[in-house]
Length: 99
Image (tube, rainbow, N blue to C red):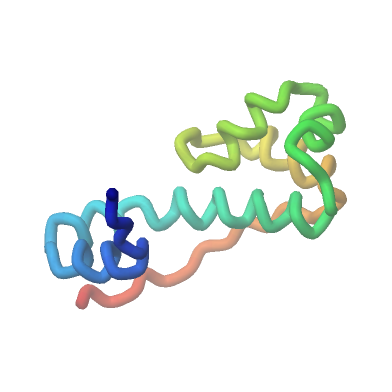
């Protein structure tokens, strides 16, 4: 019988490894964008397919956008915003001090 380890426990263990922390932190912006896209869709109470139809694209494209593995253009982000009836705002923030 397999024993499953809670994700939080694994994450806490991985966070002890400086190489893991550096790699995770390097992806912070991508995670933030993916989270913002998913939040906009969720607030609009839409499925990926519905957003795709409103954007004139496919569900697979929306899934890739929300995965954080692609770097969409501002034009694509604006189309996503229009589809989810949200406003696109891009801002620059000061970097946090190194730990």
